[in-house]
Length: 123
Image 1 (cartoon, helix red, strand yellow):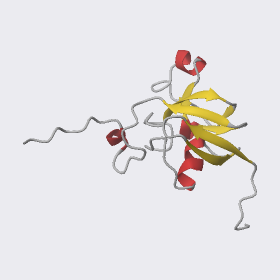
Image 2 (cartoon, helix red, strand yellow; image 1 turned 120 degrees about the horizontal axis):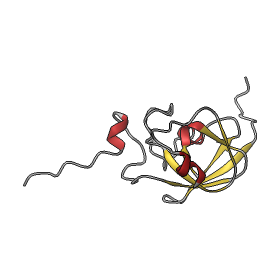
Image 3 (tube, rainbow, N blue to C red; image 1 turned 120 degrees about the vertical axis):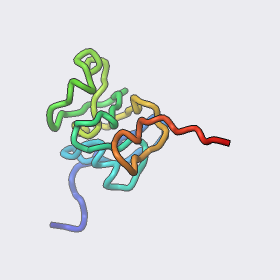
Image 4 (tube, rainbow, N blue to C red; image 1 turned 135 degrees about the vertical axis):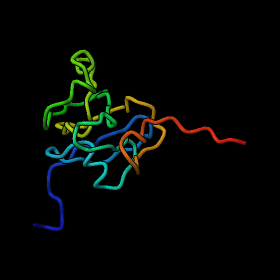
């Protein structure tokens, strides 16, 4: 294996952070971002089960890499461009927005910590 990644890449732009990163056509949007140490899409289980990486595709074409959990993306939402970033790969340049609140770009604990409300501090 070469130290240079020669796979064709497409630019992926995250609206909320105004960050753009290259992502290969055979890797998920989430994997491409994490591989480069970039931020923008919340990271959870990276397997389609938690829904933390839910995004809305604003422009561009994607290809499914596996089934998308209906517990996190309904058929109606999918028709509106919503998907899970860990389950789709770019086929063209992609513009997306994170569907949930973007409190922290990366979850360092359990998946639910990316969506949990902060605990108010007592004074």
